[in-house]
Image 1: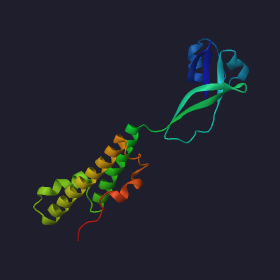
Image 2: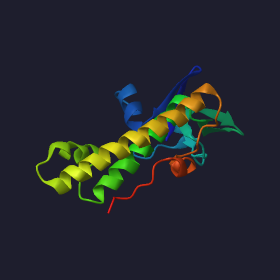
Image 3: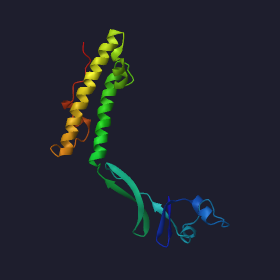
Image 4: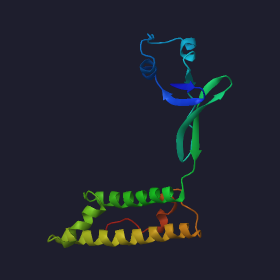
Length: 170
């Protein structure tokens, strides 16, 4: 992992293949010496551990203690990003429930509403009811978050008890 420092203009990541392209007619060994690279403004970047966080992205390396070191930007999810994650978890919960009766998803199960086979029509009616009640509650919860009257749940586990129970009728 390398970077190129051209009078303060940093190119990162930078590869030996790029260096070869940038210096036609110059023969470089497979493993050039550090001094040879640095004379061309190319520096090895020391890897650093990826930190924990909601959104972690690599940024331009920083020069510290005489070496270029990998740097990271860490931030929390925005309300919009967290809302999307919760919505995906709610949808996955519904889809996983439908799969217990071999439907591909809750949508697939609901599509049997007009089935001529009573068992499928009954299951579809229940899935439509369950889907509607689940999304109505999830939307209420997320609306409260947006209104500031409720903290953002960390995940579906924080709201699962408030969602309709997932059990097929007998």
